[in-house]
Image 1: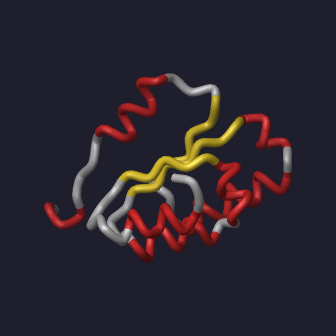
Image 2 (image 1 turned 180 degrees about the vertical axis):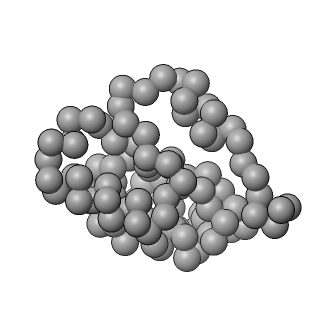
Length: 98
């Protein structure tokens, strides 16, 4: 998506979605973007991609800690393998089916 408004507008149309988001977008919009996603699409599954180099940056570590506390499905550190992403995105147990 081009920006936060476009993302949220599209997610409002879905009952559940898998959202792949880069930690730079979270840095740009703030950790609140994760909360907004969860509000407009309650059954969304959010996967955040981060660079391991960010772990030495206290600002990025703080962002990762905050988004994990909000409740993301996964936080994947680069370099990652394609199968890791596919396995995270491929399996989805819909909350209403349990």
